[in-house]
Image (cartoon, rainbow, N blue to C red; front, side):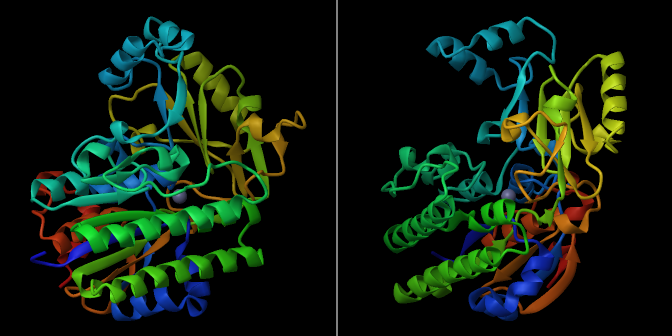
Length: 423
Ligand SMILES: [Zn+2]
């Protein structure tokens, strides 16, 4: 490798505040932050949820451009990539609702989890490949397999079944059993082991990996539970195991490291059970945000009025959605509340309930609890601290670290420029 590569490590769900409070007990992250560039508060994406945030870092663009406006993308056979419809009809996997949707109104579909093929435009992975670099993604959400030399799908998509050019680790199936925390930690560690083994064999120039234990632990146990401290200490120890492994195979100086979180976290006291408030409509609960698919003005007004009874406020769709997505309305929960689907509250019929996730994210524009941290470390990074940066500022700097051409001036959002101009 002619210049140092980059290992991009996403630690899911660690807020800037949580990192600051816990840093003294996280020796490996603390050392990276001390010797590298610490961004204490990396701004939240407009929709501060996992998939929009990944897309922001991968593209340096806002959701209006990259198209991942939510953890769930609305799908009805109209607003979807053509290939997906063709694939469904060819393979016979088309469902009754698909067939119904393709000839029906724009709101007869449903939200489904965002995937790599929903992501619009060039990502860091394609830019790296175009420059002749080799790319490995180990369980990183929204990475496109075709953009990678080595690929392991995210373990929540049964990553053990879809490995390209890699030995598949024995990842655990995701479910809500009481050993779920152990499963999350075990999967994270197996991804790290795979990464280290690949680095020793092949030394890819760009390696992406994500560790999900903190987010899971915060959702289920809440910020004040001692287990959260333990999960952060565990993920720090896992990072330490990677660093020690790199040292042992003499690759520590071969890479820059970027460790960052996708969003913050904050406790909620109550959850609005969205599909009981608005039955018979396709909707997506994204923590403190609710997306509703409706193209009928009269119905939209009724929905907004119903939600307003519970303190829910509408948001400007243009701040979140690509211009061609015209039939989705966005709403923000009142302080201390989130949106959850009825399937999480099957044991009673209330409209408002104790939340299944006692801590969450996606609290809407300007919410400081959605802010996260980032650290850049390596040969070309001077030690320092930046108090606050806009969400999209990380991507241009990652390009710079890899020696890739910058985003062209016209397509660089103003808020992405800040960190690029450092040093
Ligand atoms: Zn996340």
